[in-house]
Length: 126
Image 1 (cartoon, helix red, strand yellow):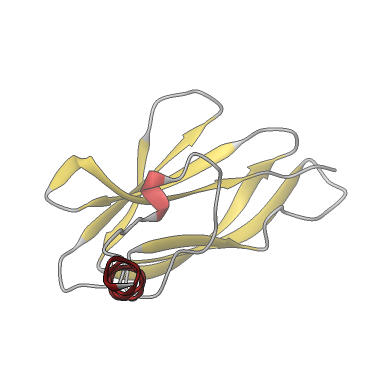
Image 2 (cartoon, rainbow, N blue to C red):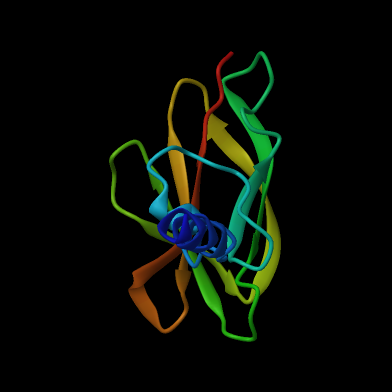
């Protein structure tokens, strides 16, 4: 009886321990426009971009959730990244989203272009 009681108590104690795992949008392979509260994020609204024309528009919004500055880069298709914006938070209207092209906006730590904080993919299908 005593071993069973000890086993049940151990199980109860270990199942009540909080999880210490964390993740960010940068950890996810799937495109995302939202991240959990407290972590850096970047989003596009609307996404996908609506419209019948060759070009559509969206607004890119980012927030590092800290006093540290961030840098936003954009790549078209599999092309090279180009600086799009900077600051700890910001918002910029984009009026040049081409139909049937994938754009990726990436938010990096401002001091280190290798530290990806968050990203979002934007498309426009006419």
